[in-house]
Amino acid sequence: MSTVAIPLLTVENYKILPETGPRYQLIEGDLYMAPAPNRYHQDISRNLEYILLEYLEKHPIGKLYDAPFDVYLDQYNVFQPDILVVLNDRLAILTEAGAEGAPDFVVEVLSRKTARLDRDNKRRIYSTSGVRELWIIAPETRQIEIYLLPQDAANPVATHGENDTFASALFPGLAFSAARIIAQ
Image (tube, rainbow, N blue to C red; front, side, top):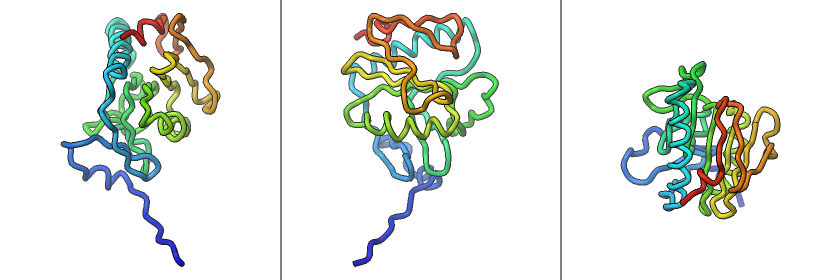
């Protein structure tokens, strides 16, 4: 019995999807529907986005975008991170279509339906694409994992709980309160 190889989907296939209807991500040549996040996911994303936008207004070191926003990493990977920041020295990756290259900073807020893809596939691809810092926020455990991908793509350099305050090398002078980020 012979098996039929199903060809990988590419950016060209992704670009012909309708703009209306469900959102999708292209991950390693496979198309995944991105369901609408739940309310708590939205709360976390909004809280962090507010903190970062407030910082970037005072310190204009880059541009922030939130999902849905296409990030074209290579021929077989188009992601829609929850939050991303492109620093000023790399703004040339921004196009009308989204970002054509790796952002400097990416946040993925986990949901039950996408946690495996975010933790495994997307983290691995972010690390080989040039993302410098990745935060994976787990609403269920109320923890924030910090990955400095050029140093160690497999293990977080820190995991913060809701009582922690911490910083990011990409945002000098800004201290993050985990409680403020994960507040409902």
